Image (cartoon, rainbow, N blue to C red; front, side, top):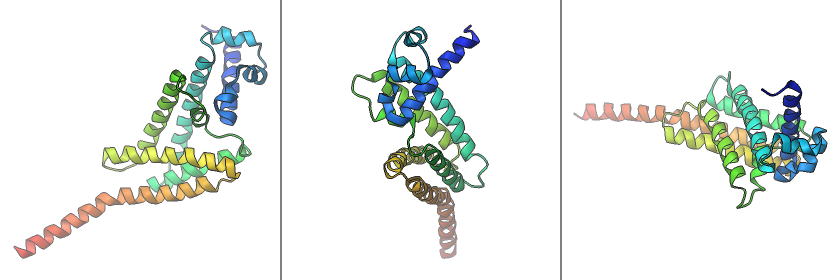
Length: 212
């Protein structure tokens, strides 16, 4: 079992990597930058992460991914409807971007923009985190059709990632707020569609009965 001091040193390294990735993607996880930010000797990186940079990046994404899952859950929970929940999530992300001074976005998204064909392990880790976030979003969407529900949940995450990029470039939370409004309208329509189809079916049935 790791000693408290060792656990703390390891956590500082991972937090430094997360901070760097949120700012500059994979380039932000350069070993020298992590060492400086974590105030740790360079040898400690190889002690705690003998497999090198890929191992640090993947574990950092795992820690960050768990935090984001909790953040998504908290943002979506308690809303009076699915459209309100989705809008609340985008507004929460917008506030997160604003508080960073438009200097930090999603660590996993930023890293994904930097990876190359040889970064197989990192790509797999990033894809896994994205899927886990979609799982959380999907669990809050009362869309009866499972395939469509998954698509909409994925679209919510895609919109967040794209709006993050625009928001940083434009130094504005407007892209995230706009995306939230559009997504809320989409979710409202998707939730209402089965009810509309049921109403249409009942009307058609009554018309058929009268004709008989």
